[in-house]
Picture 1 (cartoon, rainbow, N blue to C red):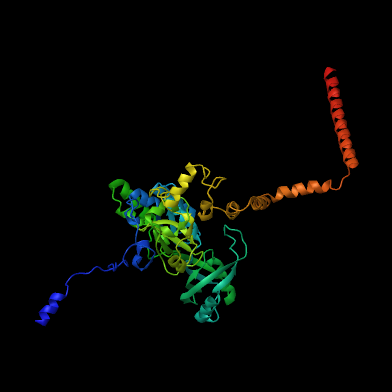
Picture 2: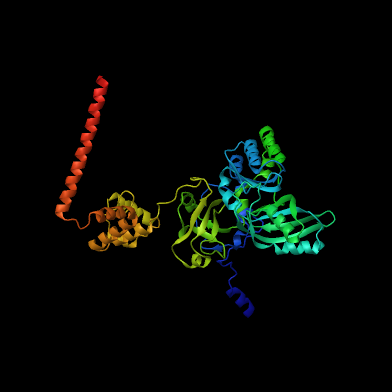
Length: 481
């Protein structure tokens, strides 16, 4: 009986839990990969139907925001290859991730239209090469000596660009991160090695230095780039023939699948950056150059440091912009207001997402004050602005000088005038210097001296006028003759 009574007292119900089932995002594409491992600021936001996943863009948008990991052939220059791609795809502009010499082959990242905004970030990224070096004689120590010399030439090295280079031949420092010997044949005077280095390193110069170090002399026989920034030989490396065939297939059979294989979304280049996920309502403001504030933050990566370069992305995995972090991860999780990141390079087109700024309580109050004439038409404080507004409102777009002037608006009139004078002095130092020079010239002059100076000036002026009129009369006489 007691058991039955106990069972009846127990409630067999499913109780609500504050736990959401974990998503396995390890296989999600591009910037959404391991999305569940990002730190959560808030889970509440209103999804906006605008925009779409990078892989599901319509073909026109897909091409105009795409990149090609091209296997550059030997002989044509990088600029020629990029121009051919532009002509094949009939796009507005193309750019590449770093010049390869005509005889060099391998990875050349070609950016199309919108993706050309990422060219600078890829040009500065690290590179990897496989090089064939030819020695001018047998190396006395053989393979061991060559491997030792290769190891010696790692770290920061002085380099001067080769004679055939198109850049200024200036001595500069470039870093070799790592190098490995792949093959060595002392009888044929040949060696093959792999090197990982900083952007702008000349492997041709490195080969010459290796020859000098070994005491036999050497030059570069052949070179191939196997990695450029985020792209390497294993990631959708395509040839110019592939690009041409894909465009032909698209034009003649309307089959876009080949073209989608050849071209990758620009987000492919940004997978190495730390991510900050932005609310849909804040996306367009960022596209217009606004700083990302804490209320617009959804998720963020761990380990973000101050002034680190990050990628701002939407909940659909689209890249909005490259930004500079203004807060570390710890500050993002603990602060309740402030600037998260400022935009370095905007990638997304404006007005792809709707405008959602100016709808909050502070913006509504500002609009009302402007309508009542208590703020000017630009929203700046004037004489009739309430003290409560100037004390409590933080304008993040103001410069330091204008912020100082605005802060001083609430202080007595004397303090305001002093601040204005300081700002004017800071803005126009050259004019004041000129006035001082003029004042110094006639400093300490007596009234008699001043009168004498003016009399002399008048005499000089009269003499000049008389001389001019005399010349004119002489010219008239000549004409009459």
